[in-house]
Image (cartoon, rainbow, N blue to C red; front, top):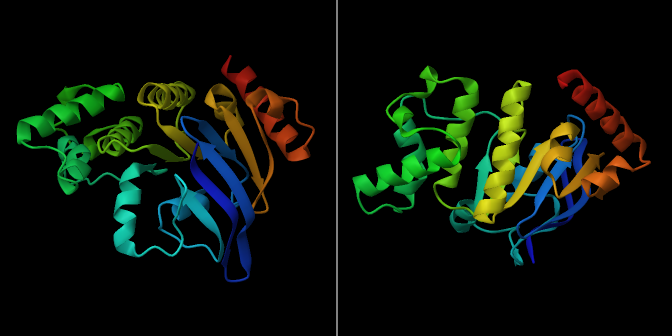
Length: 252
């Protein structure tokens, strides 16, 4: 079963065509990495899935339901089912960690009492390897890496069926990058959700992806399992593979 399917998606900004007939699929429980150079439309495709942008042509399906042309009021349900984790934490600095993670729980009325809400927040923080002791702290008091985890806990709080990650390891050191990769893999497997990760980091994709899709010129030019991509003769894929091997050598 497909959780998400994009068919022949096209999007232009003025004379610049960012998506040019993009088609891809994310199956239930699958971790899919979308890889490509900057400006190839990776983040743009995520914004289309949650209705922050509308395509010029093509269709998006969520669990078989067409999404294009829906009224803004209809996106409320879709956005709860598709949890978006942005490139930057996007936490509200004036709210505590507790209130940031609880934001969706309150909006969707998913907790019956304050004690139940606090327990739910603690559980989601634990899911991303954070302790309940940070609940009363504020985002500016936390490191960027911890803020990213709090952002993920906030997304998980409303129990989405699909997780969408926009460059989750940007500005992270190798240790933090490895920890985030392990989190994505563990959460996908233990919660049974599908994960779509847009990235430029082939090393991360090789570590945890079930399938890798290479974008170039607004299209999917190559895709396959990590092993298939390692053996790919496509020049762009080969270039990314070379960089990934060099990075692995540097880390080791």
